[in-house]
Each structure stands twice: as structure tokens, then as C-alpha cells.
Image 1: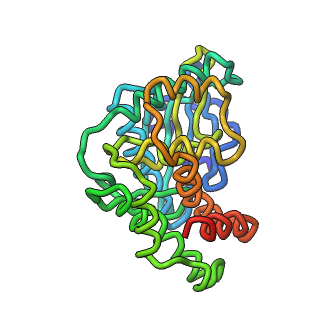
Image 2: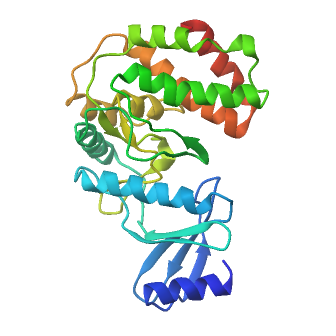
Length: 287
């Protein structure tokens, strides 16, 4: 972080920043711990063309989760543009390694978030991002329509244009829609985190679960569960606690695979061909 930006943030926060330490903050943005004599802040900087837009979307997503009053998120203090990109400052959450009890509380609180419904359509008030890829949230009355039109189809098209999937590897939109309608339930729109892997939650030292880096929208609650299971899964106590709040629905294994297909396509488009085999295997199995 350069001196001018440090001084600008200190001025906006009305504090004296005494120490700045780089911290792990994901693949997309620089991240820093800012320390004053009595306070600690977390700052992310992205100097990409859409850096400020990314942070505005993150702020809106965190605010939507906060407004549900179901699970904690860090308090946003600043979201500001730079000459190129932008920066985000929020409360710093001191995290610990989760215990079984912590995972149990995370499961209960995520279920409460998923029971939070304030609209009868699938989508969100604005588009946002998954990673640094645009994520369209146009509203649909039917869940299968939303998931095909706003999730699978755009990522498949992106992969096709980039030469990561061939045309003959991509099912038609009508085939996607037909098979998803057969497997997806008639469900109410739930507020979902949208990108819930192990790097996007924290357990504070006092045991409070926090969600971070959301890609929120109103969708089927199982999409968050599918993402948690994609790269190893959470502790069993998390799933046991969560399942106390939702009755099981048939075809869950098939839906989990299809919901994971979206995240695998995102990874294919962001990180390359190592994800192609997983993508094509699910496409061939279901479409």
C-alpha cells in the first residue's frame, strides 16, 4: 500500500494508522491489516478496471446478509474509487480454527439465512460478481429458468468463446432447461451467499460465525450446500445442524452435481483447463 493511500484512508477514518501488514485476501485483490493504537481494520485494494464495481457489489451483498439479521458479516467502513480500481475497508475479524460446536452454529445460522425470503422471484436487485466474473441476476419466476439463463448458459458461452469448451461439448439451452426442470424442485427463493467455500466464512475468536466475499442472490438454498461440498466439505456437525431446518427433497445428489457444475465452469473460466474434465463429466452425465 502506498503512502498516499494510507494517508487518505487514515483521513477518511479519522485515525492514525501505525502499522500495515499484508494478509491473505484471495486471488483477486491485495489485502492488508491496518492497525492503530486501539483498532484494527481489514483493507482490500483492486486496481483493475472493474475493481470499484467489484467492491460495490461486495458491499451490497454483505449489507443484504446483514439486513436478514441471521448471520454476522464484517461491518463495511469505506468503499471508495481510486484513479484506477477501488478499495474497501471493513472491521478486522480475528479468526480461529473452527471447533465442532462452531460448525454447528454456522449450520444453524446459514439455515436461518436460507429461510430469509423477501421476494417471490429468483435473482437480485443488481448484477454482481463471482470471483471477478460478471454474474447476471435478472429475475425469473421459475428456478430452473433462472439457473439455466443466468448461471449455466453465460459460463458455457464464456468457455466456448475462450476455446475452453468445444461447441459439441455444450448442450443446447433447451436441453439444459428440460433436464433442470425435471430435477429442480418447486421452491421459494432463499437468500444465498452464492460462493460458500471454506475461504468465505470465518469463526471469530468468540465463536461468532461470519460470512465474507458473497455473490448473493435469491435462489434455491441447496446451491450453498453444493458449493461447501465441492472442495472437501465442511465438518459433519455443520450439515447435521443445517438439516434440522429443511426437509429432504428427492434428487438431491443430481441437483448437487448440477449446482457444482456452475462453480466448476467458473473455475474453468478463471483458472483454466485443469477443471475441464470435471465439467465435461457432469455435462455428459446429465445433458
